[in-house]
Image 1 (cartoon, rainbow, N blue to C red):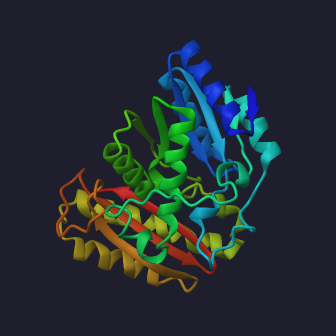
Image 2: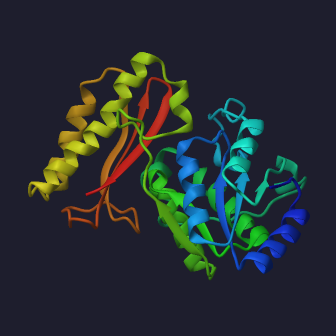
Length: 280
């Protein structure tokens, strides 16, 4: 496995990997790798070709009131995990390599990024789209592998790829969950025992909504009311949003068309922000 910290070396390595293995699958991460990332890497390997993992805590994705310095980092463990999983190359640049002094060019998606997380984190997706566009240009992947848990990221990145004419496959991997149903997340390790017990209510609410749809409920108002009721029983949980949306546009829908709608939840559990979703 090659460990690369410069844009130039990554370009050269990616070109060599594309020629040798017939294409590259990119797994973009912020580091602090966990079983969810392992599933992404496994899917990338199964798709064929070379696998490149990027590890970069993107400062543009953090708002002025968000703690970039406190974001979990474990570079040595991350590199060891990638090597054990058979990754071909890890791109792990410093901030100044991606955003050098005087950097002033940004990519902004103005539709899919606006609802849901875009309302409470108005600068977040500009950071995501700027970095992902740079990675597309640096790595030149045939496909990018993303997780269903970050479903709005998936929709935004898909829109960027379409609008900017990137011929890149978007491969989406199902959410990996803890035994108690909590979606695997970098932030889970920050939860106390009591917070963890209450955080599980998010996946419980999603499961209840799916059961309601399977039993014939189509009203999104009823679904959101039930989800809000379940979450409201937990003092540590504060709902940021609970919305049934179209999976491509992230726009709210009035009625559920089974298999073609998402219930998305974001909530604070004390000071930890968690997101999750389910296909209804």
